Length: 179
Image 1 (cartoon, one colour):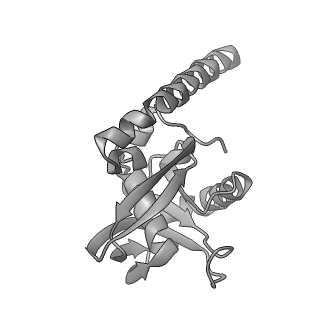
Image 2 (spheres, one colour; image 1 turned 90 degrees about the horizontal axis):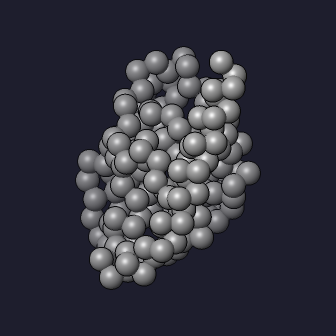
């Protein structure tokens, strides 16, 4: 799957709730393949052009866990503490920013089977969940920094947006030839 980049409108909208759980296993597999290929640790469905509240995360290579996470219809219901950490984003390539987030979160979500759960997360996994929840709500890491820091990456963002718009036009032209 292609990673949708900064500037595409789907990345700025709040994603729709997942209601059909039978339709998502293949999507999840494709998302994991894409995330691993891009060397990411998390991916939201809208980053691959799918308007669903669905995220995947795998921090097993950086933390002492071998667990991968598929979180559906996630909602942070509580948070506390504070930490600052440098984050990157597959949809904003080569931009890394220091982002302040809560250290601990309580997340309400559903599993791939539709079961409802509540769990607490912290560390890199908690941060990755917050990053992907932001994506699912139309928020980028650049929205989480000061106006001064945002200005420092403005030129990079415009270049990424320009490239994203060129890809959209190219895709639209290809689709018109298929008709």
